[in-house]
Length: 372
Image (cartoon, rainbow, N blue to C red; front, top):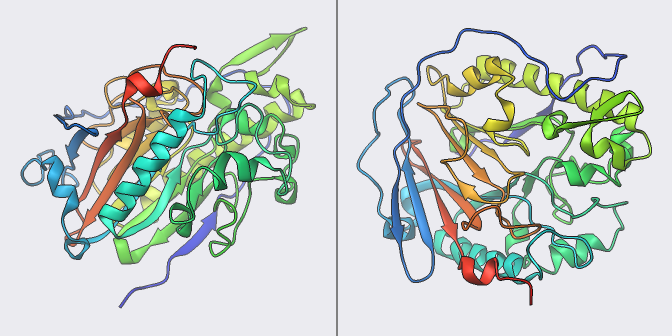
């Protein structure tokens, strides 16, 4: 019997009246970690980086290495699967070193092929920066069509897109200036409303007992970096809003709320697997060692962490959370190529609840072509 999934949003911590700088340091004792092992398999179409998960608390590889061809196995051998993408909302006027929407469309096409191949995708994790350069300005903004609905076919939007805000998403969104969720243009708490992403609050979690899994979405945009203007310091993208001071306070409070929520869910969740994601890879979060230690704790759960912001798909540039696993998945084709690996990540959950993740990459020569 399939049990219904349930959702909760984070609860606010006490506010800070002062404008805060980029990071708050919390000292703690680090736990020992082990080294992540990957194998790389190249085919004519994609490069697949395979990582077989560790059993919680074991520190040893669970099962044999998975070959690239094994992802095409019948969905009957799994509880389900999911896709992960980030940094994808390409803009014709303002972009980095990706000069057309070709890359975003190539990745969308590859996602459709993988979606069909898997046959049991339950949701798509979206780590933010969905609409370059400044987010959407309302629920009726035409960018919902031009940068999402017209790029990713209805098939890919037939499952919920579990989302968080990226730094660019905040620039034109009233959510930067308000704690009123009604002012937030990407907030949608109705999982059945597939016309928009599923994001019931900036910080939220959702149980999937039928998958032996819990999803935790975190708003960590405080960690984008800071800038000081006339003696006032605020996160970089707050200076692109009409409320730099209030934006700084809101992002600080949301980050603290996110950390509190994660520690609470790590303690209370009964799921074997925890999918945790924010817009930022683990190397952006080294000033929060308590957070990294929590992500590394495999005593109760296997944790799979996803972050974006840097425009590549890899596991080498991030800070390890071994024996758990983490990905940079910001190579969605929306802004730039910070590396040659552009694409998305796939997660598969076996019937014995083992979680395996691997990347699917497109042709970087076409994706990251020089300006014509």
